[in-house]
Image (tube, rainbow, N blue to C red; front, side, top):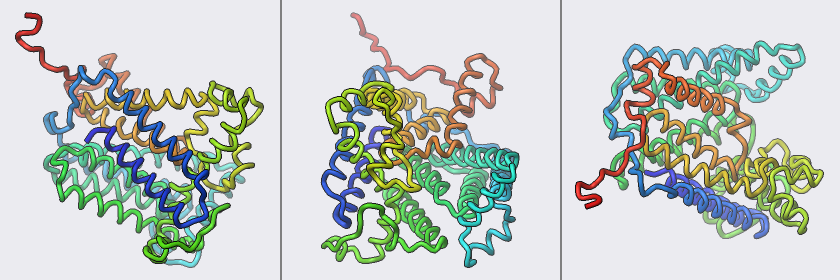
Length: 431
């Protein structure tokens, strides 16, 4: 499945979720429609960039490349490395051993509260070294997990036993990191990577097995996130929704309290962005002709004497929630720059698809992740692990260009194909 189709599905699901929230809560049309309009604009611009120059290129599926299965020793070694890195990461960020984490899952005190308290104590005590080790171990865990998912799940074909070990160990490491800190971001990264890999995995588009896998992954991770909230002592039905509130409606009666509570549990992650973006459109960008013009230009918000975070906290109750990347990007590059970024990312996704290597597949995922962050939050930049992995991949590509990358490493990540596949030239061309 192409990156454009994956993004279209993701935006469609997000739009349906926002409409469901609007039916369940006091959200008004002005708090929903501008955000939905921005979704439509983004996917259209992404499609424009994606289709630009595409007639000269044939998309290359990962399965068209000869399968490069993981070496058994390397696969098991990397899986164990991910486990050890996640344990050390949790140790340095929470001060708890695996036994303490496991016992704390059923304890009275939230692991998230313990994590926040311990981190605060480290900062006050000047324990920057411990936090540096924690971040390094977090990056190692994340990099191995994403590499495992994209090299095993997205590739298609038979999965070797050692690859099952690598995939299981790396995902377990990510899960442990999230459980130890009582946070849901690790599960979001795992879920988005797995769903993206399953969607682009070569095979029948109507494969029931693939649809079942996607459903199991989506429902399983959603249930796990709700369980994490419950472990924090949070009742989804009683979540603080800020300036909106739950209302009686036919949809609420039809879905029942369990489903409604699960939908509300994801409001801070996926629903608040709609309220934020819509409020930005109506109360900040388009409030008068001067703001409308200034926000179109790079640095226009600064010329207007405003800092976007300060402005938005005055017009919408942000709290501890994310500021969507689209607004943060527009504050620096202007709305025109933001729209141009959507075109560029679409063009990049098209270019990466034509190569079909592990490195390009990982980069395709990060392009998708950034497009998903635009209407939702800024988890790509707040959680620096994805950014570090992107920089690492770019460094590998630069080293490969210099001819300094070892052949085995180069073949595994970049394959033997250095140029996009072109359409074959007809024997009668030019005749």
